[in-house]
Image 1 (cartoon, rainbow, N blue to C red):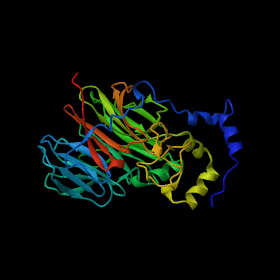
Image 2: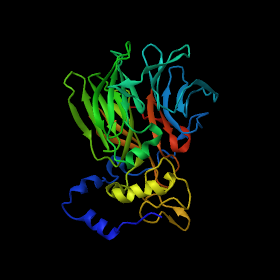
Image 3: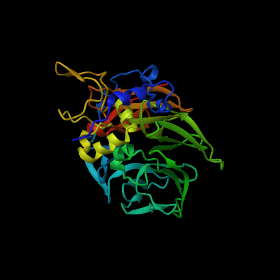
Image 4: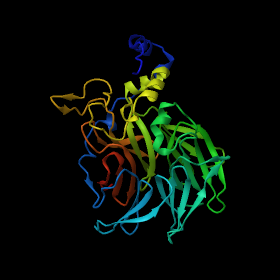
Length: 376
């Protein structure tokens, strides 16, 4: 039985004006370009796009789409062909995909590192260690189009990708941003002490990296001019940001794999209660963000009733949610696609655009969704 803290005292401290911890629970409202909508619910799935827990999607020039799912990389057929073939089966959960100019495919593999898959289907590790530590938690990979340098976000020193919620609950900030020489495999740690870096992209002009850190709800820019200057583009996002991918022109798609709630933020301040919860309760039933709802009566309410007369309310405090943000070149939010609390297209893991089509990996919905961008 979990020992319940004295909530009256906790809430009193939480609400006390001037309290230093209030900054941790400053969740912005969903307004302006973040105004709630059901755009993700209205999208059609890709033909053959029912894939178990897709973690990334990479559209190809021939019209096919590569998808990472479990320990495999799959190819969904081109030209409306719904056939699915296995490109590679790797030694751990595949978290992210990226293409190299040579035509090789890079795959981040939990517990392993980054693997290069040649067109001949031969797979070999690119880098397994950086700074003397294994690159065991690759969350995103990007390749510089000019130099070919591989940039990797290593989410955590202690957790593998599938244990992301443990990393959040433990309050870790041990992630890294790593650069890898494509020829030698030599790795350089650019930044460390990051709170679950989850996405990285090369800016269209090739002068910067843009990367997200989930546990402090931020997007930052890292200068590649040799100074290593870091600038904050977004801070205090309403959810946990994940992968970043460039849009044609000047901008980025940013996946948000779950929304923040006041209850989870309060729990992160209560070390004793949280530790006891983690020790005694099945992780599925923790007070926590999730990639999908279990629709179980044992699932904790995230503050307030979520049903009335058996109907789940779209404005309910969400345990899971679907959100993709469109950022401009300066990192400002200009649009969003959402699936609210009463929807099912939750746990967005990736969004990538090719031409006018955006392919969205909805991990919580086991689907690849198709969004058509309006012509400029």
